[in-house]
Amino acid sequence: MPHAPAKDRQLVLTIGIALLILLLSFGGVWLYLQYAKKLRTQTNYLSLPSIAISRDGHSIRAGIAIRTSGEDANWASRNQQAFEHVMKRALMEADPKKLRSEAGIVAMQESLRDAGNDALGHGKVREVLLTDLLISEGDL
Image 1: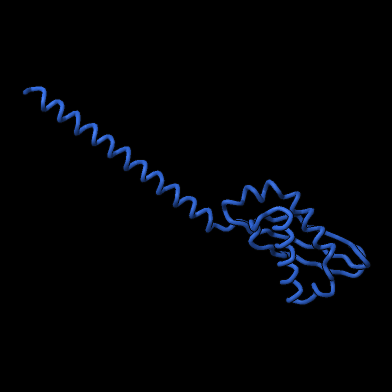
Image 2 (image 1 turned 180 degrees about the vertical axis):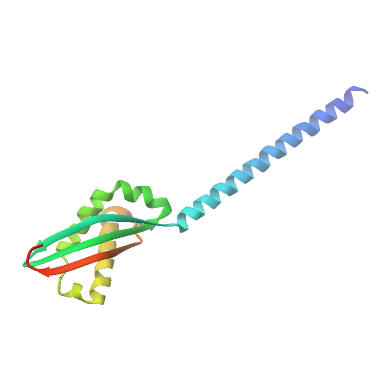
């Protein structure tokens, strides 16, 4: 009978190790889910260099910031040049007279967001903000 306590200790040790591994696994999954939740709720802004266009006797210069979630921040940075091209094209189509009103600016921001999502993003662009806006008659 001296061997029975050693087997019991080995069984308890094995069960203890299995429970520890299970506990650590659940803890790891919980931490990962918390991190993923934080990234989804985190806000990230990508600031583009100032974009200037001239068309039909009007010039527009705009500073643009693109808001994405934290999990899409790297994606936005990798696509910065494409965003610049899309935003420049959308500004070329803008009506300078409408941009002189608050409603026109809001509509332009929505138009820029939609253009970014249509061209690149599958809904990853949450918002586009005009941080600076200069509209003038003639060329810049």
